[in-house]
Length: 89
Image (tube, rainbow, N blue to C red):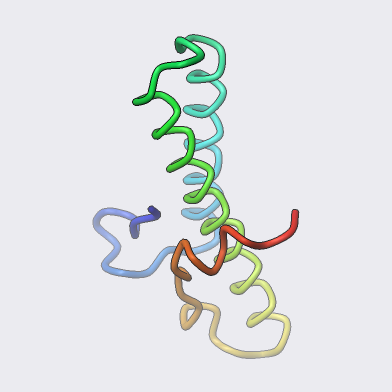
């Protein structure tokens, strides 16, 4: 699950979200390269990363849409996994 940036209260700006996306992608790629294919802990972490990435991308889209509409992007929020994990890519 996605967490706010440390030291920034509960808000993340676009660059924080993008940095989080890159960190999650790096971890995902490392686990895919180095992990044992059937390791349950590895598979659980990959699932967690997938949901966190969905949340990050959703938050970034919300922020950009709010900015385009002239609304405060900081009012965008992280949606629960049950919402974002069913989005079509």
